[in-house]
Image 1 (cartoon, one colour):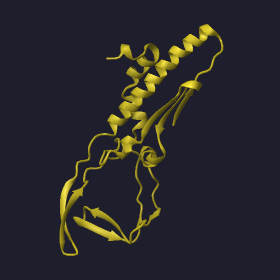
Image 2 (cartoon, helix red, strand yellow; image 1 turned 60 degrees about the horizontal axis):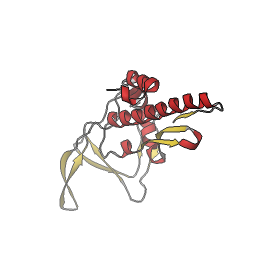
Image 3 (cartoon, one colour; image 1 turned 90 degrees about the horizontal axis):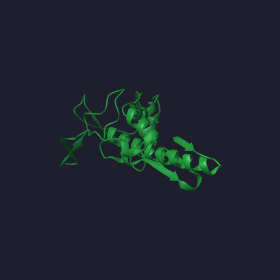
Image 4 (cartoon, helix red, strand yellow; image 1 turned 180 degrees about the vertical axis):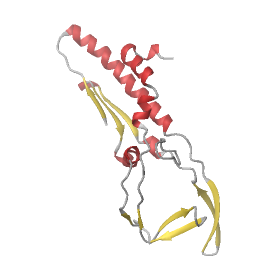
Length: 176
């Protein structure tokens, strides 16, 4: 979560702070846009056919996940949609990051140690695709493996640092 707050009481300083605050709002909005772009790279699914209780079913399997050190790739876009920016104009405060439904995006940013036993919620078994078996497998529980970080927050800043600095100093009208 990125937070910022500006306070002052002098009229001249107030005008300076209002300009600085307006520029910081633009910085936050620009960062959110670039972060969403970064995690918007598609992990296109490949159709997989299998039989279930005698019925032939076709559904996508996602075989191109991000590699360690890359930003997470999008399947549904739900992670991208959880990246947010809020502005509290009355208190000149900014809040940017992920909302409550985006916890998985923070886990991808920092990585996951692994070892946790995952059990299904609301069904009898977990289903996942195994590349080794080239098939869907069903389990009543699985041990979560380690997930190395898929950074996106800091990468969105690093890749756009010059533009972010320019917006902070001069506003968006100076950024091409």
